[in-house]
Image (tube, rainbow, N blue to C red; front, side, top):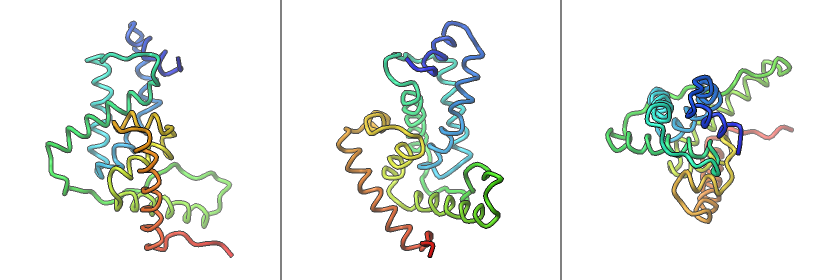
Length: 185
């Protein structure tokens, strides 16, 4: 059982600080995951908050043998799907830059290029099939393996592997079309 599973079980036993620690650990990742297919950072923030409210108030059943992070992401995904069913998909906000501040060791030019690459990747994720964007986000940004990604997306592992292959092809096509990444001489 992982540290996060223990924290949730401690919360269920009455330790309020454990929930605060879980929120600190997973809030940002959930926001960026939800934004990857909602294309609305404010709604992603609201649904992340709703996810934590759900586990705090309703206290859904959690089986400690599974990975807590995958369980949490599955709850957030289900809330997002419910939200998408209620509202039209045509609403999108302007792209916002993501990522952390670069290390002081990077030069200003390197920092700028890194930020531009991040923006280009976020734009490309918004241009490809939403399922492809989800599978890429869960695998490469959130660090889930194919089995965990399959559980979150309610797909079979083989489907996720195929989607991952197709998603990488789609991203490469979009990024090469935009000529975002240049090879250094």
